[in-house]
Length: 89
Image 1 (spheres, rainbow, N blue to C red):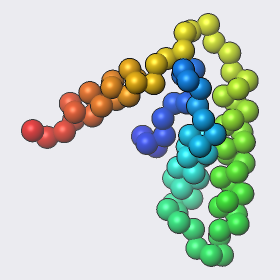
Image 2 (image 1 turned 30 degrees about the horizontal axis):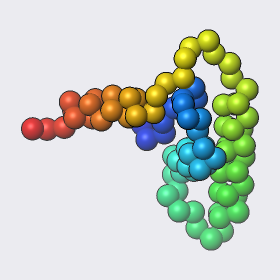
Image 3 (image 1 turned 180 degrees about the vertical axis):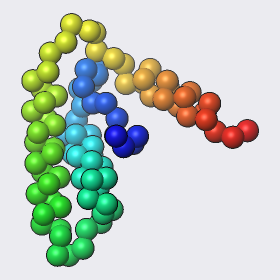
């Protein structure tokens, strides 16, 4: 899994459409190997991003949990702390 794609489910506030689309774009970039597709592949690339974003949106809104929502800022600080552990001194 691409380490840059963040979990979007069960957060308060909920994931925005831009965040979902951004994750979809990262996913399609990862599996296609294209950061920016050629002109010949633009339409297929855009359709894939749209399809992944739609499926992701549907998934996030259909999942259920009994766990309380996570706080975005707390989780972001945890990620930053983990990143600092792996940085050379």
